[in-house]
Every structure is written in C-alpha cells, then in structure tokens.
Image 1 (tube, rainbow, N blue to C red):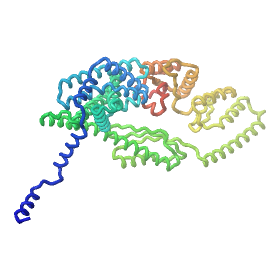
Image 2: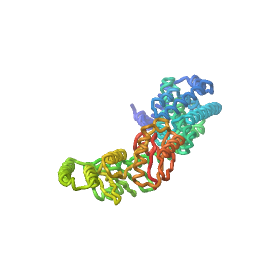
Image 3: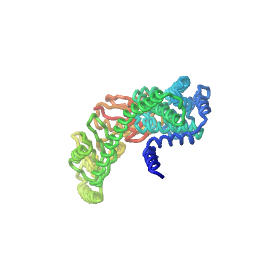
Image 4: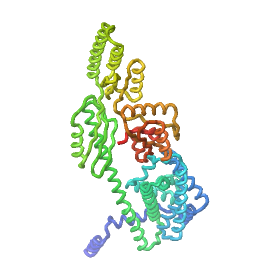
Length: 539
C-alpha cells in the first residue's frame, strides 16, 4: 500500500458513520416492527367495525350486563359483579372509537359514539329502574368503592385498554380481555344509575368521573396500540402530532385530580393508622385494649372517639393522647376516651375478701335480728329483709319518709335494664313494703325488627316494656325514637310503632335515620343495626 492509499483509508475511516447511537436503534426498531408486527389491517378494521355496530344483540347484552352489575352492587356481591363483567358489551364501540382516532376515520368515530351513547342510556335506565323498585337501597361497600376515583383507577383503565387493543388486533383472547375492559366501565356506570335513583349527587359525580376517566383512558390506549401496529401510518405529521397532543393532554388533565385524590386517601389512611397505633400502644401499657374507635374530621380538627377496656383508671390520659397525636399528625386533635374498668386477679381477690366480710356482717345482723325478733315490729322486720337483699348488690339504698324503699343502682352492679327490672319484681314479691329500683344510667337496648318487618312481636313488646320502665324510673321528660331500615318509609314506620307501644305520658319524637347515620351505626354494631330502632332521651 502506497502513501496515497493509506491516506485515503484513514480519511474513509474518519468519515464513516458510528455503529451505535439513537439513529441506529431507531432504524433497528422500525425493522423489527416490520418483521414481527405484521397483521391483516383490513381484516382487523372490518372486525372492529362489526363488533362496534349498533345491533339488537348489543342492546340485549347491554341490558343484561347493566342489570347483573346493579344487582351485584346492591347485594355487595363480588361474584355477581364479575358475572356482569363477563358479558363486556361496551368493548366493541370503545375499541372502534380508539381505532378510528388512530386512523382519523371520523365516520367510524361517529358510529362508535352513537353506539356508545345508546349503551350508556340503556345501562343508566336499567340501573335506575332496578334501584327504584328494589327494597335494598343502601350504599354498599362495593358502591362506595367506586365513588372516589384515584390515579390507580386511571392505570387500571390504561392497562385494560392496551390489553384489549392487543387482543383485538392480534385476535387472541378477546373474550378474556373484554372482562378487563368491563371491569373498568360497567360497574361505575351502574353506580351512576344508583346515584340517580337514590338522588345522591355525590355518588353520581364520583362514579361519573370514574366512568369518564376509564372511557377516555381505554379509548386512547387503543389508539396508542393501534399506532404501534402500524394503523394510521399514512397519517400526516400534523395528524400524528395532534394524536400525541390529545393523548398526552388527556392523561395529564385526568392525572392531576386523580393524583390529588390518591394523595388525600393516603393521608387519611396515614392518620387513621397513626391514631389506631397510638391508642393501642397506650392501652397495652395498662393491660387494656381499644374496643371501639371512630375518627371524624371537622375542618382541620381531628375528632377521635374511643372506648378503652382497662383494669385501672389512668388520669389525664386523654390530654396525653391529644398532645402525642398532634405531634405525630401535625394538626389539632380532640380525643374523647371512655374508660370501662375491668377486673384483674388482684381485684377479684380483693372483691372476694370484701364479699366475705360482707357475708359475715350479714350473718351477724341476722343473728341479732333473731335475738330481738319478738321485740320488733313487722315493718322493721320487712325493712331488714330488704336491706339484706340489697347488700348482695352495689348501689345506694334509701328509706323514704313514706316508708317505701328506693334503690339507686350503680354501674358497678353490672345490671342492664331487663335485669334491673327483674330485680325490682323479685324484691316487690318478697317484701312487705313498696320497693322501687332505679337502674344505672346506660344506653337503652336496641329494638331489632325482623327483615323488612314493621310489626311488633312478643319479643319486641317485652323489650319495649323494659325501656318504658327505665324511662319512667329515670323521670325522662322527652325521648327521641330513631328508626333504621332499608328505606326511610320502613324506618319511620318502625319508629312510630315503637313510639305508640311505649305509652308514656311524655313527649315522644319518632323519626327515620339518615343514610349516613345508618352507615355509622352499622360500622359500630354490625349489619343488624340497620333493622333496629333506637330510643334515647331528647337533649
């Protein structure tokens, strides 16, 4: 090789293009797409147009799917809701809408929107009619779960749309992927119908926003997948830029409120978890436990209401918990802590010793009564007998000026309303003087009706008699009778039935509980609380 050839080789080497870089990778990716992503686009478009057509089968499937989804939501049944998803009638027009956006075929876009509008109207009509005629109209957890959309719901819709588009384009597993799309669409749409029938704007707004989020995310995901497989390759750069702007802009607009909602839910979860952990730790320090905990928010103030079972009283515990929670959460906290004292082994031994001493004193009194029985009057002997019975329980024992006996029970006696009334009857049967037992102040027992019933059976009348007796002994001037039920009519009928059965010469106010009051009561006492009537003194 001469000098000129060597210089030419060096010059050629310097001017050669690099073997790596973004351009090389882009060319490799385009070659890979041409080699591995070959599909019959005409057949796919024909199949998509056929699946998204407005036909009687589509209308029938829409009605069936909406009906099954609504019934599943009212019953809080996940299995029934999944049954509605298996039908997936909304998959066709949504995929056609996304495909038409990728190919800029506005005729097919109008057809898809028409089919989709008919499906939405039919679904809402079916859901409203079912809820309106259903005896179960309470907002179940499955309904409430679809009224607070978050960023995670957007991601579910995106993944569902990508999977649906892939299955449609490759013609693999369309039925299974249709379930994923139905997961994001039909249940929220049924919740919108429930909100309309229940006249709940909050539920309508939350579920409607979730539905529109899922609809747009799925359609635009189909558009992205279609472009990846080469649909719309003849689009101009301006059309491609318009598609990219529409997709990115829509996702950004949806992500902001959904991200904020996710942040708020995470913050509430952190606060609830912190409150529960702090109260549980405080309860363990005294060998106690938290049985009931409710956290409410009043503006920036956090209201914590809890019941603590503990063997010993801890003074200033509420103030300590408030200060600790305010440091950890960073906002004002108001703690209402109700302590219920429980007995441990040492306390039980001390009580047993006290009872033994009490029995010795009773025996001594009885011995003294036997020695001077002849010198005492019948009234004195009757009073001694009542006192002897009273010593077996805790409470204040008073002999009134008219010779009658009044026994004010204390909470330590551990007697509920029915037990206190039975005690009074027993004393009145054995004593020769009038005896009146005043039960300890406590919550009146709930009056639980049978399912969908407003009639008073023997069991309910017996409990109402106990309630009326307690109100009379407490000298209550007015009571509020609150009924719960599947709807306000049933709740009010139950409240009126109990009010009439009380038969007291006091002011009785029957009323029906609101849906929020019923949900709070269910969270505290279980599902049977929705069939109950609560009687409480009017404040």
